[in-house]
Image (cartoon, rainbow over all chains, first blue to last red; front, side):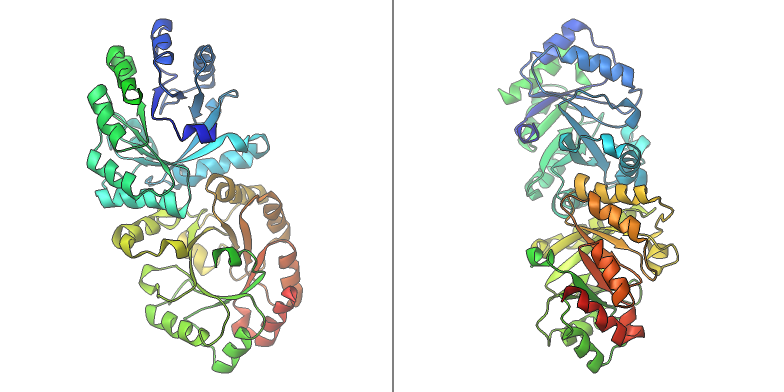
Length: 228
Length: 228
């Protein structure tokens, strides 16, 4: 599954803390997207995560959990994505939470299912930026440098440019994409229709489409055309 | 050279900021050690580093620089070891300095010569612990957990247990060694004679012998017997 993940071009990200009726979930899962990612920055619990997982499991597509909080880790996902927020001002979000989780639950961890993401959080106003105390005042070259720390110094399999809630600077995304040697570049933030999806897909390996699912399902579904 | 480094069992660490006469340097370099590591936590400059490198280069053994400060990076070493201090309370010592160096000098960096070290600094009273604001109040399992972050989440080639200035808890070192899957375990700190060298070598992949060179050269030279 880790290998398969590299080929994903389009992922829908579902937030366990937000409502999605069965018909909408069916449309999302049958859309032709490559995978479902489950996670969010606030209000994610074990209960609402397991509820969402069990609903997505009626479909055949891969379903992975992006872990933001140990309490909400649910067994049964195909993979667990572990973010390290590289531009956090708080060591806890870079390596500390991960270290504590391993200290407490190391013997239970299915290491072979973990995929570490080098996260770079770039929208200062987003919940995730505030939660992780991210330093977002970066020049494009500064963003590229964080990506190279992840790719070349740390050999992380994924660099995740997270513009959560806003559409990113595509020139910065392109610059990162050009400098990455091995890491897969995931782009997330502000994709709201086919046009923005196409632009982001042109400068990254994988795009993540989230909020628009809850705001305009029709437009969200159109973004899948980038992989067709 | 990166591959070769994995086979090193014994390394002498020389501090550019400390005096070592030619005869002593000759004894160190002809001792049978696997390599010379050049670096220190304070007073390291471009000038004293290049001076030491040029003296060591009269000998055939590998010579690597452990980079603690961008200003003192000198061309001509076989490898450059880049520490990430995982238990630092300051993000700058985990990823920040590295990111800034790449942002400023990325195009000059010989990536193929870099080796990233997951540093865990464990002697609270040491210069390096104070410089990096290291959180040293760790249970053995907490140290193991940091090592696993480096080995399993970050895939770093090296975990470096740095007890700088004091002899470490060998049970903790052993526990780390047993849990590492791929990373090479380097132990440094307080090795002052053959006995302490043997104990540390028994629970790690590579031992680093430093201070004792300047305090008791004869005893320092005896530590090389662990690899003979």
